[in-house]
Image (cartoon, rainbow, N blue to C red; front, side):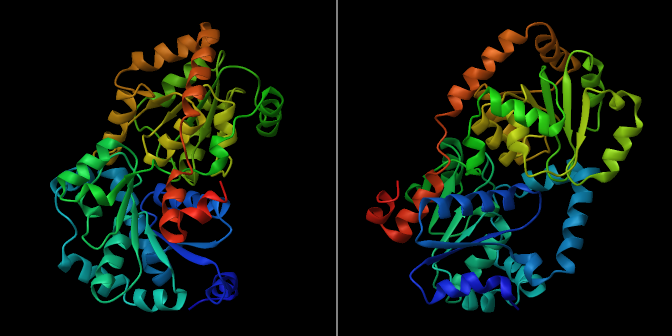
Length: 397
């Protein structure tokens, strides 16, 4: 079941390092992204841990899992209201034992044998499905602490299980929603959602000049437009509205893995301007945020948290009914972003960037200063405190 790439992990089994297994599923890129970000923070914080990120369904069913995820992606794209309806209808219902049994029988039959081979000292789930699978196995005798990291600014009851030792959440509001679902407050810790440490780095003018050169960008007002890993751009007219300002503003469209969208946009004359840049999937979003003055994005939990850490203001388009709506409401209420609820919302920001850039730039600096209060290591430190004890953690801080 395992190959040579597992050697480092298995080598740690007989050594002194503790092993933390982070489980996710790729129903949207943010869950796995959070797992990887937490993995990096854990290893940077302590030399006494070994981490492994695993999309459990894909690992156990490499043929079936991608088909299911593609079907989910198609549903999200073509029937978002249906997705929202199901989210809200089931909002106060945990995944029951019949559902978890079905999941186990269909996709996770060998999960217990995987855990017995990997021998983790702690399991952290960043998606409700592996969370439910591990909870079921704990009822059957799996003796491994289970921690749950909620990767949005909402708390659906699907996350909830009495077998979870602790929930790590983004805000006080999410904690209260878990309490309303019946979770004891003592099992909930507010840590924020972890992001990769590179999103907390702030670069000077020379470094930003190097970044612009790397991506072929000019030193001028810049707007970054994102659609997440799936490249789900606004199906309405937002992109067309943005590109009316290409003589005054530079645009970076990040379309993720959506090659069809990229081809479609590039065929449109509006997107053939020298100040319009089209970028596919990239691991350097942090750099692009550094040289951007505004982020136009879907309000995914990870994207919003990364932008918060980078201190970049946001405009939100087309939130999916459910958790993205909650994310949008949270960041709007806190003053970190605004929804695009009419064409004037776009025009207002573009006009400021084009004609009042000094004011916008000063506002950007205020966002950066506010972002310095964000503590991306809090989640890792909490886990390590429980796993290793306070003395070893303090020695590394």
